Length: 317
Image (cartoon, rainbow, N blue to C red; front, side):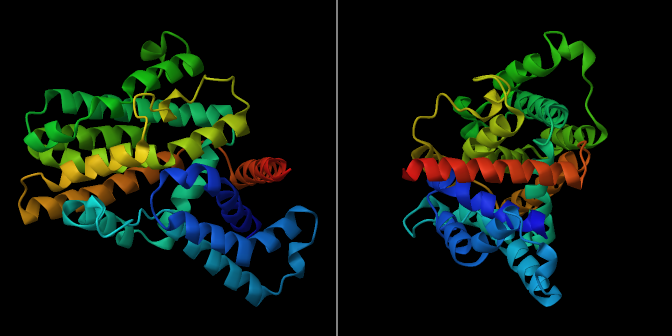
């Protein structure tokens, strides 16, 4: 329970900085929840109050509330009725993937990331998994002739080069000869290779789930990783840095506009939504196989929570 409270409070503290990238009401929801319902209790716990003093029925209520809001935090909601995200395939993907994810899945995804940044070993394992995934994705994009894939394959989004830099940092220049993909990574990669041959339009779901997720959350996730692992400046988190995208909001809006212009049948669009949900489960599988137990994850969240509090208070001075 302590973990869930600190997790949500931590997200609330980071949201004013990181979620300025997200042109939606998600940040407002998180901030309101953190300030009005959760922050006070989480801060009391972090300063030494015994959580056992919380009645069991209240703990149950808080757990349910926290998990519900962590789930809400994972949603990418529409911004305005005039936005490309409010119609067409863009809306179908946002709504279709969001509504199908259970509270448990969303909580598992968020907590999985914190497991990934609990130790340098775990984070390097996550980087390695992403390297193999993006190698398969971008190889598929290079060889695809499908017009939908070609239309959405923006060079600014490509991640393989930055992941190679991170791989050198963690594993050395000969990483291609020494690092092998994990079981969950192989299954993920095999799926990408399969659809690239049989149903290449489904690669759009992989672009949507990974690239837009990286853009939306990369600033926050990269910052948390650097803080938690005390990484050297500019090293180890290049994957989260999109140097060629100067205006994230405008870029994403343009990507959604192009998405809505694809010439696809209703059946193909629904298949892309279904594939997006499958990609989400593949990413949870990547997190599940990372090293690190609950105690290490909790330690990481507490550390980040304290650091975020200090930064917030320094900013008010």
